Image (cartoon, rainbow, N blue to C red; front, side):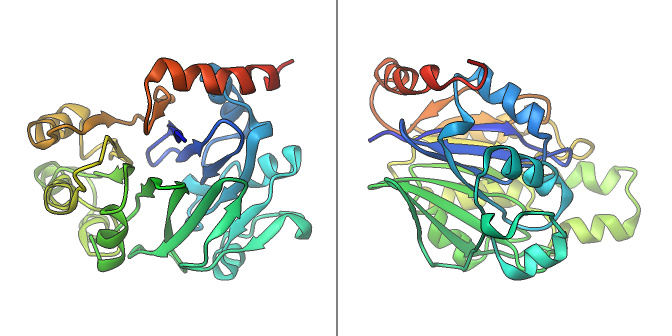
Length: 275
């Protein structure tokens, strides 16, 4: 069965990623407001009533801003590690908090969500793989380096949101203070375009259909630079650059787009947020 996926927003101003099938879905992080999440999902024909869980990768505000309000309004469980919950200071009702642990799969209907460790300057950072049978979509951003866990999980993905944060020359020449530059490129910050491209070239599975390049720096990167680097090496993989200004289109892991869209619309248009 197809997995449907989209970036609702991607960047230091907020990160939120949707992955689901025609019956259930999850949001990975919600660093934009509840209202903006509703608006962007409505434009895609998606319903928050289908969202079975909010998965929090780490405590930074650009990943957590909308979590508490969204969880309360729609009574959506929040899957989060105990250290991240403590550090983020999110006001979530106890009955909606579910402890998240690395490599402990979470089953939500036909979806299975598995978190795994990564390197980032947060208290207990994770990335996730969302699976529906053999179909797997990875949300792999805010990674300081392509560590073994990142490589192993990226190589399983039929589609992936992959961080491509900065162009090295732009960062070097840019206005950031040296301390911030070193934080970004120091192995616990973000991954460069070059490092992301190397990960893609060396570990992309042959069956990867989509690569959504994510969390681009506003000041140290451009979509054009990223596209020019990745598209010549993409092969049969469709490369998309997510933006910090609005949602991407809705993509599908398998089956014709028309068939998949008719499946999701038949279920979710009837469940519209605004009916």
